[in-house]
Length: 295
Image (tube, rainbow, N blue to C red; front, top):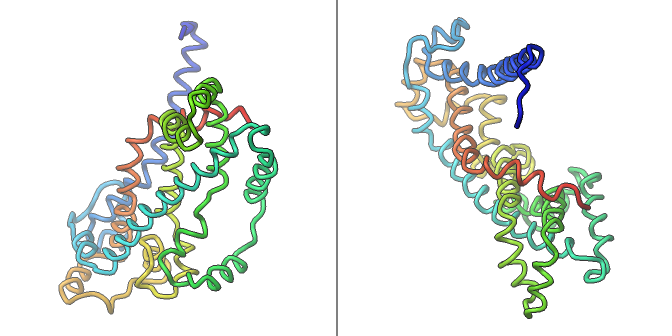
């Protein structure tokens, strides 16, 4: 890439760099504030004196959380949900996108089903019909109610369909001439070549399952079965259940404020996203742009 060295272009680059740096700092400041609050003592946080540096440094909030069986149990449910949810999503996305990527002469109903998926993106039945269906299928207050109602994300299916359609047609035609069937083409040709798109969609699915709190709230009547985000919602907006604390936790919680405990909980729920994203980042841009120009 050739860069111009005129004063105007240099000023433009400096302005854009400064603007992006400021935007990055604005995104970073709330996280730094949470970190500082989570490690600060009760007096400093109650007086709103903590900004970006801990005052009265202590780790009591994290000790309470790591000893809190309700938090750890909801964390385990969230991990199970993410593992099962991502696996189910990716399998069904693959099995849906591959036939939709075929030519009309090979799959005559392709156009109808493509518009069917697009229609589900634009319109939905709503919460009440969803609740009725889940209840009639005996999934209410069941772990699979967190996964099955959202097992086929239509938007992800459309993205992967377009990715498959962007692959060279000569590859599949040569495989067909060699006697390969659809399963062989999907598993040995399409799947290895679609790793950027699959990594991107897996990240979408991971974030969706990990961050979702609403489904657990209205499809789970038993708080013991809540995933982490639903449990965290109850702590942030309903209040901390002090009756479930052990005597040791009760002693520790007297030295910190509710704000420190909630900040520590929020930070711990961010850790899995921060760990997973760097490994998938290199696929992210390619997965979004490749295949985005075809229908």
